[in-house]
Length: 483
Image (cartoon, rainbow, N blue to C red; front, side, top):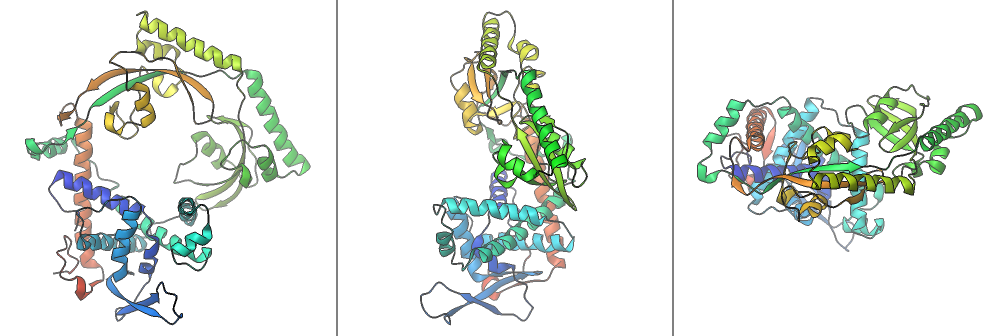
């Protein structure tokens, strides 16, 4: 198996490569989704040519894994596609690359055997997103896109991408299932750390702890009630006068992501993508029912449940966002200027001021301390910090308070904030006490890798696998040749 290694840095690099392969859609590898019988020796397909349609090229079968095949041409295509997407395969030779492809097929095969569900709606959404990304590279021309990938029509292209996405998603879900219950104890973390030679322990870059205080302009009660009353009127028009919910959404909804589609979304109970308030209301409705107006961070909504399809809910909503007056905006800025002055003058600490006046409920009770969304602790590695946040704090010395900054939140509304760097840790070798969370994450990743290795060792022996003679000279990490 390509994953087997005792070198920490190499383990992390291979983990990245594997994640890249599972996430990236290799469009031209669609032919590798076919099911073949044992006696099949080769398959044929059209080649790029201006000659007659009879011109064909033999493309040999490199391997069979369960119900899936890998063609000879797929190996180079895999490399070309990953490199074209900006990924790096430096140090990964064709045999290692081939091994990764075999692993993906093994995961996908057993995901089907274990009846791991994948949602057709989710796959179609992925395909839609990917095609939109591809179209950006052809200035929106579907004709040029089809020509580039040598496809005859859009539907055929979408069908192939659907199968590739499905295979990759099955592989991801299978791998996630293997490791979903794996946990690690503090003693295992200590053992992992002590096994790393001192001169090989990872180095962590400069880390900062950052706190902020936020002031948001207040929306008047009159404005809030105005939106609630308007949504109630929409509901009455639909129920009592037969108006179309979808038409109302197109005309009046202020959700740019759904208004043009009549407010339509598809929700899945197992995939919490929408805001909590929206999901709670939508999942409580009966088919055909329209909710009362409710509030979220985006504004006020009404939502209707159109159809339930197993775990999937087809809904539509209308969103109205409150208008904020210029007076309210100025009041919020002045309020924060006053708070900043109190902190600079020493009348109140930054942490106490956050608890007292900050409008950001997620941070105010922690003294304004920001949580790193990646590590779920308070530390931000300088080289991996969000560029916008870095720009705001890069010139701050420890315990300096920034000037009042204004920015737009995710709803498009203006808010104001001040920031402070509350702690700074310079570049350093991993320290067990100081860096316990990061070391724990590394130890847990290694444990998961070992679990995957053990699963692969077992499943390779239990699965029909055939590798062509052209690839039997490869020095596979996994026992793909069943020696």
